[in-house]
Amino acid sequence: MTEAKPKFTLILFSGDFDKVMAALTLANAAAGREMEVSIFFTFWGMTLLREKNLPTENTLENMFKTMMPEGVEAIGLSKMNFLGLGSQMLKKLIQDKDGQTASDLFNMAMERKIRFIACEASLKLLGITPAELIKYEHLEIGGVDAFWEHALDSKTTLFI
Amino acid sequence: MTEAKPKFTLILFSGDFDKVMAALTLANAAAGREMEVSIFFTFWGMTLLREKNLPTENTLENMFKTMMPEGVEAIGLSKMNFLGLGSQMLKKLIQDKDGQTASDLFNMAMERKIRFIACEASLKLLGITPAELIKYEHLEIGGVDAFWEHALDSKTTLFI
Amino acid sequence: MTEAKPKFTLILFSGDFDKVMAALTLANAAAGREMEVSIFFTFWGMTLLREKNLPTENTLENMFKTMMPEGVEAIGLSKMNFLGLGSQMLKKLIQDKDGQTASDLFNMAMERKIRFIACEASLKLLGITPAELIKYEHLEIGGVDAFWEHALDSKTTLFI
Image (tube, rainbow over all chains, first blue to last red; front, side, top):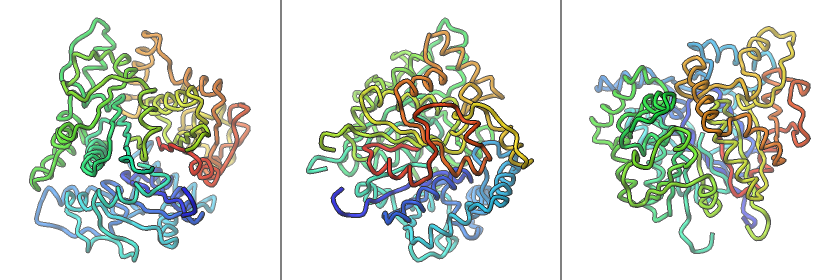
């Protein structure tokens, strides 16, 4: 890997609270170590980049968009979610211990200038428009080829 | 990585419609970029390689085999599946947008001559015989050592 | 990669029976090939390292700890678990075929001296104390930086 800073590329496919926390913890730690970090948000992971939900003319698309959580505060656990109870419990547990919740980790990722790539195909499929995404200087929209350009240059690439 | 074409090895453990779509999209894009691509199908991912379900003499094995989906058309979502409704909605959404469904992506992978390796231990465990698998020139049966031979030669290896 | 033995670092986030089996199979095969292997156990994966459950003074923590399975014998499938029936069926199927169950694979990992790292943040969050963990010479407690030190030195890194 010679002298260049090692790169880390993460595909964030999951929108589950627990997996998102693990993913962002890995990404933030990498950025904290001066690694270059890119997160490619796709499918359920895309829910983290949504700031609002604008209705479209496609009923099916609207149903799907409404069912998906909106932003990092709305996501649930991958296991033992119990209609949201599990994630509420976990959030409370984090709070009690002055730990960082998914929201904090997401904000830290932006403070650390981690590059965010919103998957073009997911946006199109789910009918999410750029206007519905969060505002962030280092957010761009890209296709799977953008992912490969990062991955081929990376020391570590993970799918979460 | 010198001059050789970079390799991508994918372990497809999941048989979920959404994860399979993501996995095949990554694999097809890599093959489209002239990368060498191998997919190691294991456990639920094995369902994609099944063309038919032949009954065996082991009742438990038969129950398990019958419960697993048969082929790429039969798989469901990892989230919000609602007994199949979620995946039907998503398939309809893809169709409405002239997008590629999991079936299209699976066929494209074969057109692009991506190497398929069916996990030997999964076949044995689930009682699936080679006669039940799809016919495809670049499909072979291999063990975990076959996986490692590909992975150790790869630029990128993902578990999905 | 020159002459050194290639390294494999695995983040075991999942505590699902089927994923754990896949993860340990990959890890044991790598160790069998003389690769250096480290497993970083985090979140649900932490359940594998628990030997017992000691109650704490935090009710919420106790609830969470009680809901999580204790040790490798107690874990269930990621799909078709049917309140444990699916994993019982699968365990029976493995037994019928003289195959290795998750327990056997876990013991083999320790025989092969695979390095286990228990995620410090997960322990703290879930209120699990070192006294509740299995006794194993090559088990240490480490943070996300310990993970990165291993990953940056690895040929292959997977998140399962």
